[in-house]
Image (cartoon, rainbow, N blue to C red):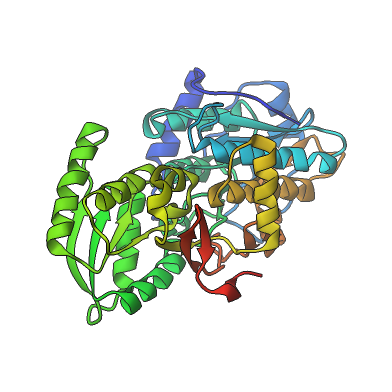
Length: 425
């Protein structure tokens, strides 16, 4: 089992055209994607693809066959950070590698499973070319990714035109599964299932609320979903402030917001921002003496949030997007033993995504086939639902969204625990 490091490679000109089509030719909230031009270089890979007879997808007219060569290995693409540094987002990469190790006994006819990563620090400027190269040059059967809703939407625009399965292990933004792209599957429950649980808690425990939001897509989307579920007659919104900038500008913005919070004196403050920024907001609020209730979106369960906020995270409420179980606790223990780092829900979901994509590829293939039809892999993914993963039950609706409900959690001792003991099984 191996991984091929791959980032920022030069992409041939004819593939750059495919990138332009992937970005410019898809309306992710509109109609189903049309075909991609079929011009490809004459290589052993493409000759094998032309000689492979595709299965009948007449029952799924939205799925257009596209092929990945599997004669030497089954390659899975990974779109996210993969450097071996302290970046908290690397936890998902480590979880994917752990899945490869655990799947070593399930290989197809002795062919190795390879994880091929690609990432750009600016996904919207460099990510599309890398994704297209993964698909056409690296011949991945599918892609795992990405680290948030914005990067996942980018990947979705590419797979919609290139007809490749995409498993989203981290994003809970429901719009990922409202884009009319039959190739996309989410591992975690979306905001529409997460928000009602937290809204009920806020309405039951607070009469007034202030909201601190990041300027990113995921934060704005979560607040929109939560607000729709808050009963206006039971809870008063005293303020909504957006965190501005990064670095010193972010610190100044948080200080100004903290002063406004103290003046408004809400019963509870909701923080919806990326994990590190949200943790910094907690530290600033506690530093100026705010003693009211605190709540976050699901990202309060990310390791980056828990470690940055430290003891100040104690007692914060946040949605629990995995099912508490002995199976999950055992997986966390194995992960920590393997990598000497604590995992989180995003890492566990990435593990599930990698296992699902590989098992679907095996189900859709046979030892005699040297080419995998990605449309058949999508059908096999649907056939694996419901799936009993380490994160709990994964059962997809027609749009690829997980139907599993979320629970309410509270942070105790650096871990998110369910507030309802019955949630643990």
